[in-house]
Length: 295
Ligand code: GUN
Image (cartoon, rainbow, N blue to C red; front, top):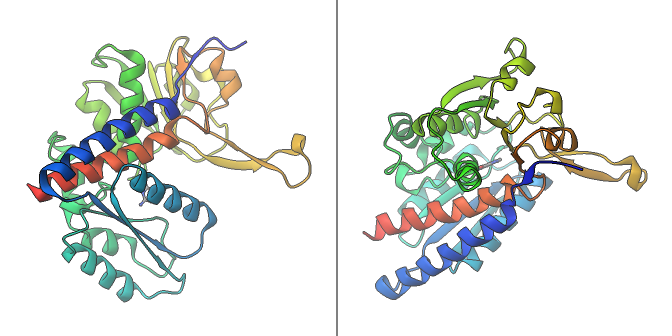
């Protein structure tokens, strides 16, 4: 029997999305315009195909104008850059998302830096990264996964996060670094742990808040968790599931869920935790971007 409260990301994301739908309807009534989201997929990575499809469906469900551009895996960097430029100039598009990872021959940095910061609904452009880092969160577009994780934390704790010890495991530009910046802006005492951290279990034991974003299945053990801590599991790892027969797979997080749920105060499941929030925050960023551009 697990003791932890389950953080229902699916339910919280549904309530965020219905609020966004209502705000998009008001925008349409006021301006005659819909928020427009363009999602670009280069290549045929199966996981990316699923993510991109879900992003498009969510945009349509929110009443947005939604377009998808699919390019072959061997598309040239120049044609991807030309597409981004075209979307930058398109007045019906307020948000541009280029799904990562890109095929190896394309310079990711070059592509992400070409997206106009005001249309950068992923929050990956250095202008948005800088705005977040300097505390101008209200003007930045904030990366969706950490933004969604923060919403889950706030709704779960329902008290100010100030002064809590937060340990973020993982230092990626997509999750770890922006998550740390958001928690710092909430006045947490923030530690970023990574593959070279010494005695990771001991570091994690100091945390009131644990955010795991390393991409290693069930790496964080229950014995590492401080009793009562809040655990946000960003990992989505597909692993073999022999119990369901040969070749069967299942999704697990970066946290050993059953063990951690015995000790934590609250924990996100995988799937159904952070994942749905990422898409909800993409809708929120697109609406914000549209409001600013329609001014
Ligand atoms: N690939 C994995 N996560 C993300 C994300 O948040 N945005 C984009 N563009 N690609 C991703």
